[in-house]
Image (tube, rainbow, N blue to C red):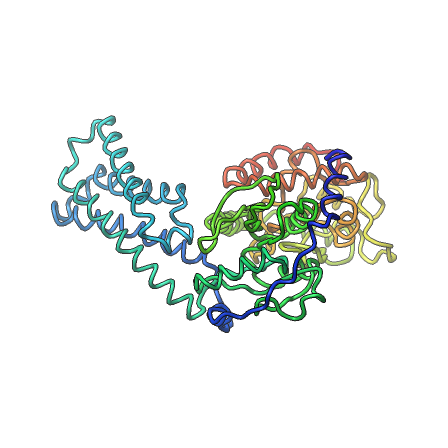
Length: 504
Protein backbone atom coordinates (compact mmCIF):
# COMPACT_ATOMS: atom_id res chain seq x y z
CA UNK A 1 0.00 0.00 0.00
CA UNK A 2 1.52 3.36 -0.94
CA UNK A 3 2.04 6.25 1.42
CA UNK A 4 -0.92 8.28 0.15
CA UNK A 5 -3.30 5.38 0.61
CA UNK A 6 -1.95 4.73 4.09
CA UNK A 7 -2.40 8.38 5.08
CA UNK A 8 -5.92 8.25 3.69
CA UNK A 9 -6.76 5.21 5.79
CA UNK A 10 -5.31 6.81 8.92
CA UNK A 11 -7.28 9.96 8.27
CA UNK A 12 -10.42 7.89 7.85
CA UNK A 13 -9.72 6.05 11.09
CA UNK A 14 -9.22 9.34 12.97
CA UNK A 15 -12.20 11.11 11.47
CA UNK A 16 -15.40 11.98 13.39
CA UNK A 17 -17.15 9.20 11.47
CA UNK A 18 -15.83 6.81 14.11
CA UNK A 19 -17.77 8.51 16.91
CA UNK A 20 -20.79 6.43 17.86
CA UNK A 21 -23.97 7.48 19.54
CA UNK A 22 -24.48 5.40 22.64
CA UNK A 23 -27.38 3.08 21.78
CA UNK A 24 -30.31 2.36 24.00
CA UNK A 25 -29.91 -0.64 26.24
CA UNK A 26 -32.60 -3.25 26.21
CA UNK A 27 -32.86 -6.94 26.96
CA UNK A 28 -35.65 -8.45 24.88
CA UNK A 29 -37.21 -11.69 26.10
CA UNK A 30 -35.61 -13.50 23.15
CA UNK A 31 -32.26 -12.94 24.84
CA UNK A 32 -33.02 -15.73 27.28
CA UNK A 33 -32.98 -18.20 24.40
CA UNK A 34 -29.50 -17.09 23.38
CA UNK A 35 -28.15 -17.00 26.93
CA UNK A 36 -29.42 -20.43 28.01
CA UNK A 37 -26.50 -22.12 29.82
CA UNK A 38 -24.66 -24.60 27.61
CA UNK A 39 -23.73 -28.13 28.63
CA UNK A 40 -20.12 -28.74 29.59
CA UNK A 41 -19.43 -29.94 26.02
CA UNK A 42 -21.04 -28.44 22.93
CA UNK A 43 -20.32 -29.26 19.34
CA UNK A 44 -19.89 -27.03 16.32
CA UNK A 45 -22.67 -26.87 13.73
CA UNK A 46 -20.16 -28.49 11.35
CA UNK A 47 -21.08 -31.79 13.02
CA UNK A 48 -24.61 -31.38 11.68
CA UNK A 49 -23.31 -30.87 8.14
CA UNK A 50 -21.19 -34.02 8.34
CA UNK A 51 -24.14 -36.04 9.68
CA UNK A 52 -26.38 -34.90 6.84
CA UNK A 53 -23.72 -35.70 4.24
CA UNK A 54 -23.31 -39.21 5.67
CA UNK A 55 -27.09 -39.68 5.82
CA UNK A 56 -27.49 -38.59 2.18
CA UNK A 57 -24.91 -41.14 1.11
CA UNK A 58 -26.66 -43.90 3.07
CA UNK A 59 -30.06 -42.93 1.63
CA UNK A 60 -28.79 -42.99 -1.96
CA UNK A 61 -26.93 -46.28 -1.60
CA UNK A 62 -29.61 -47.89 0.55
CA UNK A 63 -32.55 -46.89 -1.67
CA UNK A 64 -30.76 -48.00 -4.82
CA UNK A 65 -29.69 -51.33 -3.32
CA UNK A 66 -33.13 -52.06 -1.86
CA UNK A 67 -34.95 -51.43 -5.15
CA UNK A 68 -32.36 -53.41 -7.11
CA UNK A 69 -32.71 -56.38 -4.73
CA UNK A 70 -36.52 -56.19 -4.92
CA UNK A 71 -36.52 -56.20 -8.73
CA UNK A 72 -33.69 -58.63 -9.46
CA UNK A 73 -32.84 -60.46 -6.25
CA UNK A 74 -29.46 -60.92 -4.58
CA UNK A 75 -27.83 -62.12 -7.79
CA UNK A 76 -27.97 -58.56 -9.14
CA UNK A 77 -25.03 -57.58 -6.93
CA UNK A 78 -22.75 -60.11 -8.58
CA UNK A 79 -22.84 -58.02 -11.78
CA UNK A 80 -20.13 -55.35 -11.68
CA UNK A 81 -22.21 -53.06 -13.90
CA UNK A 82 -24.96 -52.90 -11.28
CA UNK A 83 -22.49 -52.28 -8.44
CA UNK A 84 -20.71 -49.47 -10.29
CA UNK A 85 -24.07 -48.03 -11.34
CA UNK A 86 -25.11 -47.98 -7.69
CA UNK A 87 -21.97 -46.27 -6.36
CA UNK A 88 -21.21 -43.68 -9.08
CA UNK A 89 -24.50 -41.71 -9.02
CA UNK A 90 -24.55 -41.80 -5.20
CA UNK A 91 -21.07 -40.28 -4.94
CA UNK A 92 -21.87 -37.81 -7.72
CA UNK A 93 -24.95 -36.50 -5.89
CA UNK A 94 -23.09 -36.09 -2.58
CA UNK A 95 -20.16 -34.35 -4.31
CA UNK A 96 -22.53 -32.03 -6.19
CA UNK A 97 -24.44 -31.20 -2.98
CA UNK A 98 -21.13 -30.29 -1.37
CA UNK A 99 -20.05 -28.17 -4.35
CA UNK A 100 -23.38 -26.30 -4.34
CA UNK A 101 -23.06 -25.69 -0.58
CA UNK A 102 -26.17 -27.71 0.19
CA UNK A 103 -24.39 -29.03 3.27
CA UNK A 104 -23.95 -25.59 4.80
CA UNK A 105 -25.92 -25.23 8.00
CA UNK A 106 -28.06 -22.46 6.51
CA UNK A 107 -29.12 -24.79 3.67
CA UNK A 108 -29.84 -27.70 5.98
CA UNK A 109 -32.07 -25.54 8.18
CA UNK A 110 -34.00 -24.18 5.18
CA UNK A 111 -35.21 -27.37 3.42
CA UNK A 112 -38.14 -25.68 1.69
CA UNK A 113 -35.91 -23.05 0.13
CA UNK A 114 -33.54 -25.75 -1.14
CA UNK A 115 -36.12 -28.00 -2.86
CA UNK A 116 -35.38 -26.60 -6.32
CA UNK A 117 -31.61 -26.90 -5.86
CA UNK A 118 -31.90 -30.50 -4.58
CA UNK A 119 -34.13 -31.50 -7.50
CA UNK A 120 -31.77 -29.92 -10.00
CA UNK A 121 -28.65 -31.60 -8.58
CA UNK A 122 -30.16 -35.09 -8.32
CA UNK A 123 -31.71 -34.85 -11.81
CA UNK A 124 -28.48 -33.70 -13.45
CA UNK A 125 -26.49 -36.40 -11.64
CA UNK A 126 -28.76 -39.20 -12.83
CA UNK A 127 -28.96 -37.84 -16.38
CA UNK A 128 -25.17 -37.56 -16.48
CA UNK A 129 -24.91 -41.13 -15.26
CA UNK A 130 -27.25 -42.36 -18.01
CA UNK A 131 -25.26 -40.45 -20.61
CA UNK A 132 -22.04 -42.10 -19.40
CA UNK A 133 -23.70 -45.54 -19.42
CA UNK A 134 -24.74 -44.96 -23.03
CA UNK A 135 -21.25 -43.72 -23.97
CA UNK A 136 -19.62 -46.84 -22.50
CA UNK A 137 -22.26 -49.09 -24.10
CA UNK A 138 -23.56 -50.55 -20.84
CA UNK A 139 -26.97 -48.87 -20.83
CA UNK A 140 -28.60 -52.00 -22.26
CA UNK A 141 -27.46 -53.93 -19.18
CA UNK A 142 -29.29 -51.58 -16.81
CA UNK A 143 -32.89 -51.89 -15.69
CA UNK A 144 -34.76 -48.71 -16.66
CA UNK A 145 -37.37 -49.46 -14.00
CA UNK A 146 -34.65 -49.62 -11.38
CA UNK A 147 -32.94 -46.36 -12.41
CA UNK A 148 -36.11 -44.27 -12.52
CA UNK A 149 -37.56 -45.83 -9.36
CA UNK A 150 -34.28 -45.16 -7.59
CA UNK A 151 -34.28 -41.56 -8.80
CA UNK A 152 -37.79 -40.91 -7.49
CA UNK A 153 -37.12 -42.62 -4.15
CA UNK A 154 -33.86 -40.72 -3.68
CA UNK A 155 -35.49 -37.31 -4.23
CA UNK A 156 -38.40 -38.12 -1.94
CA UNK A 157 -36.29 -39.55 0.88
CA UNK A 158 -33.71 -36.74 0.78
CA UNK A 159 -36.43 -34.09 1.04
CA UNK A 160 -38.04 -35.95 3.95
CA UNK A 161 -34.63 -36.34 5.60
CA UNK A 162 -33.87 -32.63 5.30
CA UNK A 163 -37.21 -31.72 6.89
CA UNK A 164 -36.65 -34.12 9.79
CA UNK A 165 -33.08 -32.88 10.26
CA UNK A 166 -34.27 -29.32 10.52
CA UNK A 167 -36.61 -30.22 13.39
CA UNK A 168 -34.03 -32.48 15.04
CA UNK A 169 -31.21 -29.93 14.89
CA UNK A 170 -33.50 -27.19 16.17
CA UNK A 171 -34.34 -29.28 19.23
CA UNK A 172 -30.73 -30.32 19.77
CA UNK A 173 -29.62 -26.70 19.60
CA UNK A 174 -32.24 -25.65 22.17
CA UNK A 175 -30.81 -28.32 24.48
CA UNK A 176 -27.36 -26.90 23.85
CA UNK A 177 -25.93 -30.04 22.24
CA UNK A 178 -24.31 -27.99 19.48
CA UNK A 179 -23.94 -24.33 18.69
CA UNK A 180 -22.35 -21.75 16.46
CA UNK A 181 -20.42 -19.49 18.80
CA UNK A 182 -20.25 -15.84 17.78
CA UNK A 183 -18.05 -13.04 19.12
CA UNK A 184 -19.11 -9.48 18.24
CA UNK A 185 -16.69 -6.59 17.76
CA UNK A 186 -18.12 -3.13 18.40
CA UNK A 187 -20.67 -1.53 20.72
CA UNK A 188 -22.10 0.97 18.26
CA UNK A 189 -25.39 1.21 16.34
CA UNK A 190 -24.31 -1.46 13.84
CA UNK A 191 -23.71 -3.95 16.65
CA UNK A 192 -27.03 -3.01 18.25
CA UNK A 193 -28.94 -3.70 15.01
CA UNK A 194 -27.09 -6.96 14.50
CA UNK A 195 -27.84 -8.25 18.00
CA UNK A 196 -31.49 -7.17 17.76
CA UNK A 197 -31.86 -9.13 14.53
CA UNK A 198 -30.14 -12.19 15.99
CA UNK A 199 -32.46 -12.13 19.00
CA UNK A 200 -35.61 -11.60 16.96
CA UNK A 201 -34.92 -14.62 14.74
CA UNK A 202 -34.64 -16.95 17.75
CA UNK A 203 -32.33 -19.46 16.09
CA UNK A 204 -31.04 -21.44 19.08
CA UNK A 205 -27.84 -22.68 17.42
CA UNK A 206 -26.49 -19.13 17.28
CA UNK A 207 -24.80 -18.33 20.60
CA UNK A 208 -23.30 -14.89 21.16
CA UNK A 209 -20.44 -15.47 23.61
CA UNK A 210 -19.78 -11.79 24.19
CA UNK A 211 -19.00 -8.33 22.83
CA UNK A 212 -15.52 -6.81 22.50
CA UNK A 213 -14.76 -3.10 22.14
CA UNK A 214 -11.68 -1.01 22.90
CA UNK A 215 -14.01 1.50 24.59
CA UNK A 216 -15.28 -0.96 27.20
CA UNK A 217 -15.30 1.66 29.97
CA UNK A 218 -17.91 3.70 28.07
CA UNK A 219 -20.41 0.85 27.94
CA UNK A 220 -19.98 -0.94 31.24
CA UNK A 221 -20.10 -4.70 31.83
CA UNK A 222 -22.86 -5.45 29.31
CA UNK A 223 -24.26 -4.34 25.96
CA UNK A 224 -27.74 -5.32 24.81
CA UNK A 225 -27.69 -7.86 27.64
CA UNK A 226 -24.51 -9.54 26.43
CA UNK A 227 -21.29 -9.35 28.45
CA UNK A 228 -18.63 -6.93 27.25
CA UNK A 229 -15.56 -9.12 27.65
CA UNK A 230 -12.83 -6.63 26.84
CA UNK A 231 -10.85 -5.05 24.03
CA UNK A 232 -9.63 -6.41 20.70
CA UNK A 233 -6.50 -7.69 22.46
CA UNK A 234 -8.73 -9.57 24.89
CA UNK A 235 -10.61 -11.08 21.95
CA UNK A 236 -7.39 -12.49 20.48
CA UNK A 237 -6.64 -14.13 23.82
CA UNK A 238 -10.22 -15.33 24.30
CA UNK A 239 -10.38 -16.96 20.86
CA UNK A 240 -7.14 -18.82 21.51
CA UNK A 241 -8.48 -20.31 24.72
CA UNK A 242 -12.16 -20.87 23.87
CA UNK A 243 -14.01 -22.19 20.85
CA UNK A 244 -15.18 -19.35 18.63
CA UNK A 245 -16.69 -20.17 15.22
CA UNK A 246 -17.32 -16.65 13.88
CA UNK A 247 -16.23 -13.11 14.69
CA UNK A 248 -18.57 -10.41 13.37
CA UNK A 249 -17.07 -6.93 13.05
CA UNK A 250 -19.87 -4.37 13.39
CA UNK A 251 -18.38 -0.98 12.56
CA UNK A 252 -19.46 1.68 10.02
CA UNK A 253 -17.95 0.77 6.66
CA UNK A 254 -16.61 4.27 6.10
CA UNK A 255 -14.19 3.65 8.99
CA UNK A 256 -11.92 1.84 6.56
CA UNK A 257 -8.68 2.31 8.46
CA UNK A 258 -10.01 0.91 11.72
CA UNK A 259 -11.75 -2.02 10.01
CA UNK A 260 -8.65 -3.03 8.04
CA UNK A 261 -6.53 -2.75 11.19
CA UNK A 262 -8.95 -5.03 13.09
CA UNK A 263 -9.19 -7.57 10.25
CA UNK A 264 -5.40 -7.81 9.95
CA UNK A 265 -5.21 -8.75 13.61
CA UNK A 266 -8.14 -11.18 13.48
CA UNK A 267 -6.72 -12.94 10.41
CA UNK A 268 -4.27 -14.60 12.76
CA UNK A 269 -7.10 -16.63 14.32
CA UNK A 270 -8.50 -19.93 12.94
CA UNK A 271 -12.06 -18.57 12.73
CA UNK A 272 -14.45 -17.04 10.19
CA UNK A 273 -14.22 -13.25 10.26
CA UNK A 274 -17.25 -11.45 8.86
CA UNK A 275 -18.10 -7.82 8.30
CA UNK A 276 -21.57 -6.88 9.47
CA UNK A 277 -23.94 -5.03 7.13
CA UNK A 278 -23.74 -1.27 6.85
CA UNK A 279 -25.01 0.67 3.84
CA UNK A 280 -23.13 3.81 4.90
CA UNK A 281 -19.89 2.85 3.22
CA UNK A 282 -17.95 0.23 1.30
CA UNK A 283 -14.56 -1.36 2.03
CA UNK A 284 -12.43 -2.73 -0.80
CA UNK A 285 -11.42 -6.06 0.70
CA UNK A 286 -11.17 -9.59 -0.64
CA UNK A 287 -14.69 -10.64 0.33
CA UNK A 288 -17.46 -13.10 -0.37
CA UNK A 289 -21.12 -12.96 0.54
CA UNK A 290 -22.93 -15.16 3.04
CA UNK A 291 -25.77 -15.01 5.55
CA UNK A 292 -26.00 -15.69 9.26
CA UNK A 293 -29.48 -16.21 10.64
CA UNK A 294 -30.80 -14.68 7.41
CA UNK A 295 -28.71 -11.52 7.90
CA UNK A 296 -26.45 -10.62 4.93
CA UNK A 297 -22.73 -10.61 5.69
CA UNK A 298 -19.46 -9.94 3.92
CA UNK A 299 -16.87 -12.64 4.66
CA UNK A 300 -13.44 -11.03 4.96
CA UNK A 301 -11.40 -13.95 6.35
CA UNK A 302 -12.13 -17.66 6.18
CA UNK A 303 -11.45 -20.37 8.69
CA UNK A 304 -8.90 -22.68 7.06
CA UNK A 305 -9.55 -26.41 6.74
CA UNK A 306 -13.23 -25.88 7.50
CA UNK A 307 -15.78 -28.71 7.43
CA UNK A 308 -14.66 -31.71 5.40
CA UNK A 309 -11.25 -30.17 4.86
CA UNK A 310 -10.56 -30.63 8.57
CA UNK A 311 -11.71 -34.26 8.41
CA UNK A 312 -9.62 -35.06 5.32
CA UNK A 313 -6.54 -33.46 6.87
CA UNK A 314 -7.08 -35.49 10.04
CA UNK A 315 -7.37 -38.77 8.09
CA UNK A 316 -4.30 -37.87 6.02
CA UNK A 317 -2.20 -37.22 9.13
CA UNK A 318 -3.35 -40.27 11.06
CA UNK A 319 -3.14 -42.80 8.22
CA UNK A 320 0.07 -41.57 6.55
CA UNK A 321 1.65 -40.74 9.90
CA UNK A 322 1.07 -44.26 11.21
CA UNK A 323 2.33 -45.87 7.99
CA UNK A 324 5.47 -43.71 7.90
CA UNK A 325 6.22 -44.37 11.57
CA UNK A 326 5.85 -48.12 11.06
CA UNK A 327 7.99 -48.02 7.91
CA UNK A 328 10.73 -45.83 9.38
CA UNK A 329 10.90 -47.40 12.86
CA UNK A 330 14.01 -49.49 12.01
CA UNK A 331 15.79 -46.37 10.68
CA UNK A 332 14.81 -44.41 13.81
CA UNK A 333 16.15 -47.21 16.04
CA UNK A 334 19.52 -47.11 14.24
CA UNK A 335 19.68 -43.31 14.56
CA UNK A 336 18.92 -43.53 18.28
CA UNK A 337 21.74 -46.07 18.72
CA UNK A 338 24.21 -43.87 16.78
CA UNK A 339 23.35 -40.83 18.92
CA UNK A 340 23.92 -42.77 22.15
CA UNK A 341 27.23 -44.18 20.93
CA UNK A 342 28.64 -40.83 19.79
CA UNK A 343 27.98 -38.64 22.81
CA UNK A 344 26.36 -38.83 26.25
CA UNK A 345 22.89 -37.45 26.73
CA UNK A 346 19.28 -38.17 25.77
CA UNK A 347 18.30 -39.46 22.32
CA UNK A 348 15.50 -36.93 21.91
CA UNK A 349 15.56 -33.15 22.00
CA UNK A 350 12.35 -31.69 23.47
CA UNK A 351 11.40 -28.04 23.13
CA UNK A 352 8.23 -26.00 23.71
CA UNK A 353 6.95 -24.25 20.61
CA UNK A 354 3.83 -22.43 19.47
CA UNK A 355 1.37 -24.55 17.51
CA UNK A 356 -2.22 -24.33 16.33
CA UNK A 357 -3.99 -21.15 17.48
CA UNK A 358 -0.75 -20.04 19.17
CA UNK A 359 -1.00 -22.76 21.85
CA UNK A 360 2.22 -24.20 23.22
CA UNK A 361 3.19 -27.82 22.67
CA UNK A 362 6.32 -29.93 23.03
CA UNK A 363 8.08 -30.90 19.80
CA UNK A 364 10.13 -34.11 19.46
CA UNK A 365 13.41 -34.23 17.50
CA UNK A 366 16.50 -36.38 17.52
CA UNK A 367 19.26 -34.66 19.52
CA UNK A 368 21.78 -33.21 17.08
CA UNK A 369 23.90 -31.10 19.48
CA UNK A 370 26.17 -31.93 22.40
CA UNK A 371 24.35 -32.33 25.70
CA UNK A 372 25.25 -30.33 28.82
CA UNK A 373 26.51 -27.21 27.00
CA UNK A 374 26.96 -23.93 28.93
CA UNK A 375 23.78 -21.81 29.16
CA UNK A 376 23.06 -19.72 26.06
CA UNK A 377 21.32 -16.40 25.70
CA UNK A 378 18.08 -16.89 23.75
CA UNK A 379 17.88 -19.62 21.10
CA UNK A 380 20.63 -18.92 18.55
CA UNK A 381 20.05 -20.60 15.18
CA UNK A 382 22.54 -23.21 14.02
CA UNK A 383 25.06 -21.93 11.47
CA UNK A 384 27.54 -23.60 9.13
CA UNK A 385 30.31 -25.35 11.07
CA UNK A 386 28.45 -24.81 14.37
CA UNK A 387 30.63 -26.35 17.14
CA UNK A 388 27.52 -27.29 19.12
CA UNK A 389 26.45 -29.83 16.45
CA UNK A 390 27.75 -33.41 16.70
CA UNK A 391 29.01 -35.33 13.66
CA UNK A 392 25.89 -37.51 13.64
CA UNK A 393 23.82 -34.40 14.27
CA UNK A 394 25.26 -32.61 11.23
CA UNK A 395 24.23 -35.53 9.03
CA UNK A 396 20.79 -35.70 10.60
CA UNK A 397 20.18 -31.97 10.17
CA UNK A 398 21.44 -31.96 6.58
CA UNK A 399 19.12 -34.84 5.61
CA UNK A 400 16.26 -33.75 7.94
CA UNK A 401 16.31 -37.16 9.63
CA UNK A 402 16.36 -35.32 12.96
CA UNK A 403 12.71 -34.41 12.25
CA UNK A 404 11.47 -38.04 12.15
CA UNK A 405 10.36 -38.18 15.83
CA UNK A 406 7.84 -35.47 14.96
CA UNK A 407 5.73 -38.30 13.53
CA UNK A 408 4.85 -38.83 17.21
CA UNK A 409 3.59 -35.24 17.29
CA UNK A 410 1.49 -35.97 14.21
CA UNK A 411 -0.09 -39.01 15.85
CA UNK A 412 -0.82 -37.16 19.10
CA UNK A 413 -2.50 -34.35 17.16
CA UNK A 414 -0.16 -31.44 17.94
CA UNK A 415 1.38 -31.37 14.45
CA UNK A 416 0.53 -32.25 10.87
CA UNK A 417 2.65 -33.87 8.17
CA UNK A 418 2.41 -30.68 6.11
CA UNK A 419 2.10 -27.15 7.46
CA UNK A 420 4.12 -24.13 8.58
CA UNK A 421 7.25 -25.21 10.45
CA UNK A 422 7.05 -24.42 14.19
CA UNK A 423 9.61 -21.84 15.30
CA UNK A 424 11.23 -21.50 18.71
CA UNK A 425 9.10 -19.38 21.07
CA UNK A 426 11.82 -16.71 21.32
CA UNK A 427 11.92 -16.43 17.52
CA UNK A 428 8.13 -16.12 17.39
CA UNK A 429 8.18 -13.27 19.87
CA UNK A 430 11.00 -11.56 17.98
CA UNK A 431 9.55 -11.79 14.46
CA UNK A 432 5.93 -11.13 15.44
CA UNK A 433 6.99 -7.60 16.39
CA UNK A 434 8.43 -6.78 12.95
CA UNK A 435 6.33 -8.88 10.51
CA UNK A 436 2.63 -7.98 10.10
CA UNK A 437 0.34 -10.99 10.34
CA UNK A 438 3.14 -13.25 11.53
CA UNK A 439 0.89 -15.28 13.83
CA UNK A 440 -1.45 -16.09 10.93
CA UNK A 441 0.92 -19.04 10.43
CA UNK A 442 -0.75 -20.58 13.49
CA UNK A 443 -4.23 -20.79 11.96
CA UNK A 444 -3.42 -24.43 11.14
CA UNK A 445 -1.29 -27.06 12.86
CA UNK A 446 2.46 -26.77 12.27
CA UNK A 447 3.98 -29.36 9.95
CA UNK A 448 7.05 -31.54 9.61
CA UNK A 449 7.48 -30.10 6.14
CA UNK A 450 5.83 -27.19 4.34
CA UNK A 451 5.50 -25.08 1.23
CA UNK A 452 8.27 -22.74 2.40
CA UNK A 453 10.70 -25.61 3.00
CA UNK A 454 10.30 -27.15 -0.47
CA UNK A 455 10.85 -23.71 -2.00
CA UNK A 456 14.33 -23.25 -0.54
CA UNK A 457 13.32 -21.46 2.68
CA UNK A 458 14.65 -24.13 5.00
CA UNK A 459 17.26 -23.84 7.73
CA UNK A 460 18.85 -20.62 8.93
CA UNK A 461 16.91 -17.37 8.45
CA UNK A 462 19.69 -14.84 8.99
CA UNK A 463 17.82 -11.88 7.47
CA UNK A 464 14.38 -10.38 7.99
CA UNK A 465 13.60 -10.76 4.27
CA UNK A 466 14.13 -14.52 4.47
CA UNK A 467 11.70 -14.82 7.35
CA UNK A 468 9.16 -12.61 5.56
CA UNK A 469 9.42 -14.88 2.51
CA UNK A 470 8.89 -17.94 4.69
CA UNK A 471 5.79 -16.39 6.29
CA UNK A 472 4.40 -15.44 2.85
CA UNK A 473 4.80 -19.04 1.66
CA UNK A 474 3.14 -20.34 4.82
CA UNK A 475 0.15 -18.01 4.35
CA UNK A 476 -0.11 -19.05 0.70
CA UNK A 477 -0.29 -22.69 1.79
CA UNK A 478 -3.01 -21.98 4.38
CA UNK A 479 -5.17 -20.00 1.95
CA UNK A 480 -4.80 -22.52 -0.89
CA UNK A 481 -4.86 -25.82 0.99
CA UNK A 482 -6.05 -28.97 -0.73
CA UNK A 483 -5.32 -32.66 -0.33
CA UNK A 484 -3.52 -32.59 -3.68
CA UNK A 485 -1.41 -29.64 -2.47
CA UNK A 486 -0.31 -31.67 0.57
CA UNK A 487 0.65 -34.68 -1.57
CA UNK A 488 2.57 -32.38 -3.90
CA UNK A 489 4.56 -30.95 -0.99
CA UNK A 490 5.28 -34.43 0.42
CA UNK A 491 6.53 -35.57 -2.99
CA UNK A 492 8.67 -32.44 -3.41
CA UNK A 493 10.08 -32.92 0.10
CA UNK A 494 11.45 -36.33 -0.84
CA UNK A 495 13.18 -34.77 -3.87
CA UNK A 496 14.35 -31.47 -2.43
CA UNK A 497 15.51 -31.98 1.17
CA UNK A 498 18.55 -34.16 0.38
CA UNK A 499 19.87 -31.51 -2.02
CA UNK A 500 19.43 -28.53 0.30
CA UNK A 501 22.64 -26.81 1.43
CA UNK A 502 21.29 -24.36 4.04
CA UNK A 503 20.41 -26.75 6.91
CA UNK A 504 23.24 -26.82 9.47
